[in-house]
Image (cartoon, rainbow, N blue to C red; front, side, top):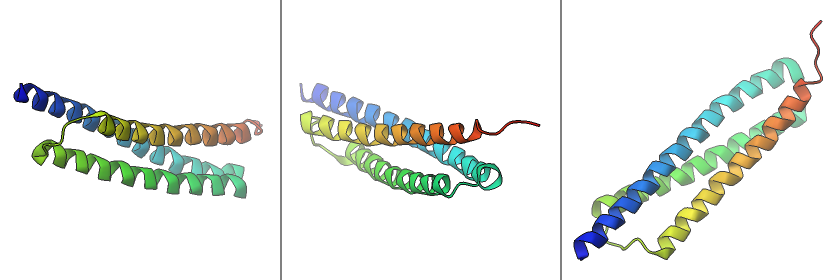
Length: 125
């Protein structure tokens, strides 16, 4: 019976690690996109408001990536050396991290929408 509990614990932790890897990969890509948006703003839009939004998002993105990387490291240590059961508290912690990630995704979508609205004002001659 103990083997089954440990097997399930390891499986759940591996699932969480895979999910975090997907989140961090997505946030890294958003960072690449935000760099492109920054260039677009500097060369075409030239809006200080947009530049501030880009800079604020870049900071927020970096912070959440750091949080997720530390969380992933803790999970990897738990997978390797830990004996703590995967219980409701651990599941709630993971859901809290998911909410933090999704909040950043929503902020990014709002920023992207703002940038696209500014870009639609330009017409080709």
